[in-house]
Length: 152
Picture 1: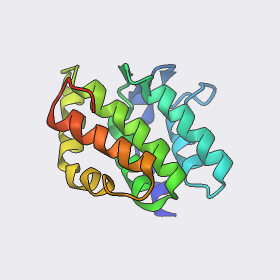
Picture 2: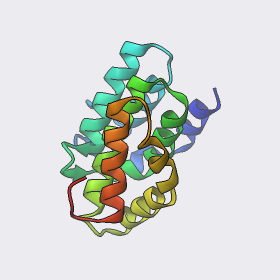
Picture 3: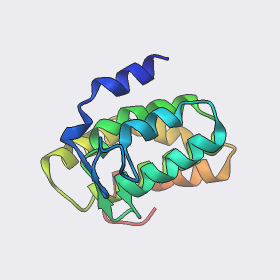
Picture 4: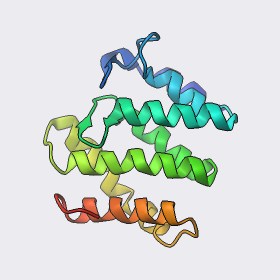
C-alpha cells in the first residue's frame, strides 16, 4: 500500500506528541506505528490507533502536538478511504486540529491551519453525510475554520 511507504518517508523523530518524541517506539503514541495501524484493515486495531492518535496529536482538543502537521495528509487520506466509524474518529482528531489552531499561532500551526482551510470543501461535503456523527464533526470543523474561537 502506497500510503504505508509514504508514512516511512517522514522523519518523525523531528516531531513531538503529547507523550514525547513522535517516533519513539515505546511511547503510547508512536505516530508512524499508529498511522500504519490505522490502515491495516483490522477494525479493532484501527480504532485503537485512532484513539492513541487523538491522545497524542490533539490531546483532548486543548494541546496540539507538532506531529499533527506531518500526520495531517495521512488522516485526510483515511477520511477519504476508510469506513464511516473510522471517519468519525478521524474527524474528531481533525476537530481538535481546527480548535487548537484557532487559538495558537506558531509557524507550524499556521501551516496546519492553512492546510485545513484548503480542504474546507472536503469538510463541507461531509456536513450532509447520512452518518450524524460525521456530519456533526464536519460542521464543527467548518465552524472553527470560518469563525475561530467560536464553538461549532
